[in-house]
Image 1 (cartoon, rainbow, N blue to C red):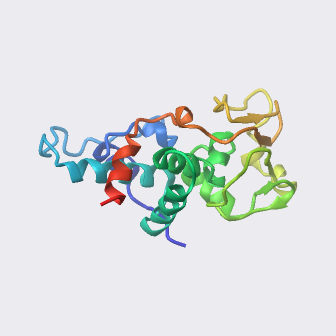
Image 2: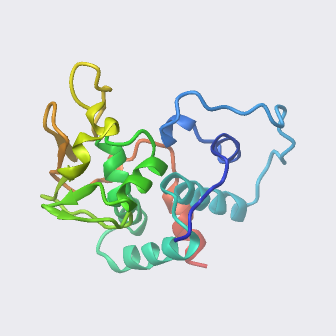
Length: 200
């Protein structure tokens, strides 16, 4: 399985992203403080940057991302909106959004190790696309682990859920109540540039 192992802080700086988007509160880099980059980027560079940004946030490799784009282009509605909605629906991203993991990378690893069920069935594929009405839970066997016990009780971290997800209080269970929409995307991205890049 291909994994994106690029350094978080360095890549965030290159793509002009806040590390908080990736789930990291205190990551920063002091490399190249003055930024030796050209001030004006070409149209292609801007388009490529937006694509690399989305790929990096969700940990998606090139072939898989182009497959998402092909599917999004065949769906009704705006291709860019469809693409963002699709990557948001990945199981590893939903696990991260529900607060079961601190970062998407951790969520991907936990999913691969089979710690979650979707509608009662264990799913260990991070790219699995959830649907409205799906119930995501931590497996019965995994609940006794220190990792998941720490998500319950008074010391549990506070999680801000997007409006398309709900999580029952003091439980390890979340529900997809709707499909994510464009205004649910909480980072800056100009998806029309990605569409233009693939339309060439």
